[in-house]
Each structure stands twice: as C-alpha cells, then as structure tokens.
Amino acid sequence: MVRAFTQEYTYEHPWERVKSAFWRKFGEPENRLIYHIVEVDTLNRRLDAPSGKLYSTRAITIQCPGPWFLRKIAGQDICHCVELTVVDARSQSMRLTTRNVSLRKMIEVEENIRYDPHPENPSGWTICRHHTRIWIKPLSALASIAEKVEHRCAESFIQNGAKGREVMESICKYLEAQPTGLSCSFLPK
Image (tube, rainbow, N blue to C red; front, side, top):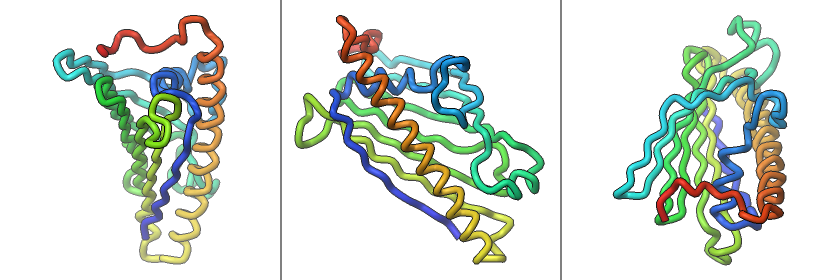
C-alpha cells in the first residue's frame, strides 16, 4: 500500500519573500515553531553562477510521525531525512525533495514541494504545490493495518504542513514589515 496526497496553497506574498521565509522557517532550536523538527544541518550549498541556481542539501532530524506503536516497533523516536533544494533565481522557482534515510526498512516517505509565482498574480503571490508519498513496508502483507498506519502518518504530515505554512506566513509578514524586505540577496538576478 502506498498513500499519496497533494496539497496546494497560495501565499499572498511575492516569490522572493516566500523564498526568504522558507530558509528561515526552521529557525534556531530555542525559537523553533515547528515542534516536530529536532535539528537542521546544512550539508552542502553551491551556487552555480552561470545558471543562477542555488543547490542545497540539508540533513533534517524529526520526531517520528505516526502512531506510538510504530515508534516502539522501530525502536526510535526520531527519523533522519535529507532535503535537496534547487532555487532558480532567474525563473523564480524553488523545488525541494525530502526523503527519510533512516527507518527505510519500515517506512519510506518522499515529499516534493515546489514554489513558483502564482499564474494569476505573478508579482504578488506564490503558489506552493506539495506532494507526499508514504509507504509502510513490513505491514504491506497486512493491507488493512498498513492502510490505517499510512492514513495516520498522512494526517501527521498534513497537520505539520499546515503548521509549516502558518510559520511561513508569519515570517513573510515579518519580512514584509522590514524596510529592506530581507531577501536572499546572494542569489544572482
């Protein structure tokens, strides 16, 4: 069984501001508003000046989503993930893919998010398209149990996504109030 879901959200903020908010959304641990995030470390960041693309790889440690018994079976409460991000400053597109690297014998999660200028208001709004796929492996023989576990995990991802959007909105409003707009000026135009 595989559970997949797609969400779409419109930020009523320009792409530059949303991109800046994205890089700030996890914040410092003592100020973190997304509580399931334990740690975020940048492993690699590379700017390809000719193409205007920024490539970033981050390690993200999260509290395991899903029901308590899954965490007991796994023997751990945290999950390690890798996030690959490509920011294309010229086309104003940001794509990221996040996959778990631990617990893969039990569960595979892949999250794809894309931020682009909104087609109805490209200079003022940003559209976020979010697709997540969850696959519980050892329970696949017990399809009904696997389906329930995948459903609970999906509910957690949806709730965490809503909290992430709420934090991004707050950061966008903060950035909007700043005199400089606090954009990522290190990216080529």
